[in-house]
Image (cartoon, rainbow, N blue to C red):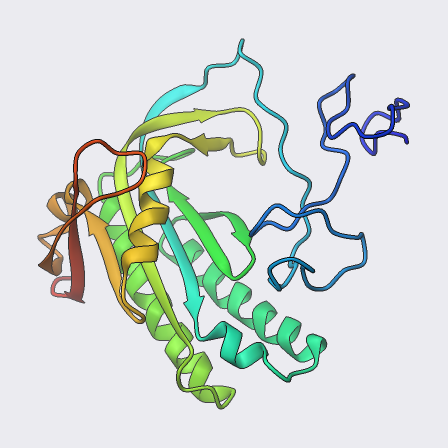
Length: 247
């Protein structure tokens, strides 16, 4: 087969191009299973494929990236499976499109950028390309507004149980080449933000201690305890964002 990026011929069974490192197979962004070019849903996990992406090749060792203080937001939908059952795939895709558009609008209005959509999840970043003193606060405000926007969308489409949950983390991480033109954000911070999102109750926002400390003047928080997080030797403290109290 030929590499879709550089056109070099590749032996059968190869997953990445031996010339440029481009992934040769399209994959489900949720579970990583191989999918067809025109597939609307993953045959392994059922996730909507919007958009289909090729797995990223590993970044060259010679490009270690730049250390920056960033805020990372992860959010996903709860109740999406219920919505999808028995519905035409095009209706499901139309709903996801509305969700993606609203999510992007919210993130950009608070000065963040959407790094990627993965199935029904969204990752957004503040500080990777332009740092502000209130990036952590902006991230939490965006998460709270996205939760409200998804609840409103659920009412509009007749699925009141549809909800979003989000996790927000702030800290130093690596920002380097790869991903999109704004730079690829990687590291432990991204993983923990994703874990916090998975721990959040439907309709709620959990943040890390650094995020809470940096935004507590404008946002009311309550302790959500400490949690064992995969890949972390020490428990991670979590705080639930309750409401905006200033600004």
